[in-house]
Length: 425
Image (cartoon, rainbow, N blue to C red; front, side, top):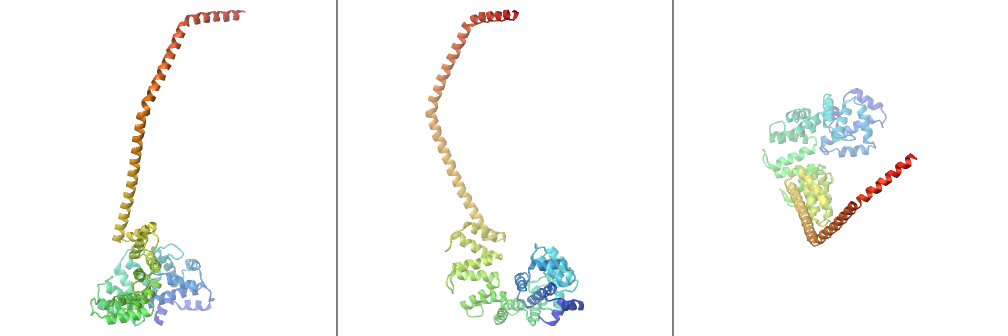
């Protein structure tokens, strides 16, 4: 990072410099500035990804600061563009708070109005991807162009990307090369990698594999994970270079360890198939898992397949379905078909179970009916005989009462007369 970049992005006024000199070393404002400087240097160099907060969290941890302390300090100290930007950065990535792209965008806009380079850069990213604001590639290019025209490496590399992919501007590979070369002069690793891609594909310019490999190596050797992954790909497929499995594995490993999901899945394939290396399903699953957790749909479906089929591990249909669903939600057609097949298969099993249960119940009822046919007639006959006996007894009692009715009437009259005599006495 050159002096001009440092002055333009981090120093907003002479007063800010004076304040830094009189503050104690452990003051959070100084550490906030260090974090912002780290982000700026990392993006300018191209050795951290604009959408990856992990290196920043590691840096904060190395400063022996709890992220929550910085978050609280930032929320109460929005007096300069650095603190405004970093508070937006915390909201953008959900550091010590829930992700809130809208809040982040508004904070980036606020800081960008104070000519904060990183804030202007992230405003451009928000417009390009639709984070917290309606997607507008024209405005995205406008903000990125401002940075590039001020001779900042991150802006130059991003302008090259816009020209390469037609983002907010008409696609123009020659202009892309021009801006990448400007950024490369300042040491930007992403520009080196992207220039290599253009030379490899030969889109709009003469194809030049030698130059592609040169820039892949240049970027990879300085730690750019995308270049490391691309260089590994050229070695494993022998693109403009002799096939070399050892070098391919070396660069895939380097890239995978930095969190590149494409390198992780490629390394997993190699360990799974045992090509050029001892077959190792545990390592294959490890790298599939790493890639899948970052949302790589191909890694997710591969991991799901391993769990479904029990390839050298115990079958686990719950895990298989979990990763198939993850992949299917991202539009992976194969995963969607597998999920549908699993559901149909499960439903068919249930139907078979229910059918067996139904047949079993039906057979049981048939047996019960047959049994009832045997038991019921004698039972009904016994009940009929009992009813006849009870009816005879009832009729007998009735007749007996009728015969004794006159006697009962005489007795009742005598009893009533005796009662009346007693009353008189």
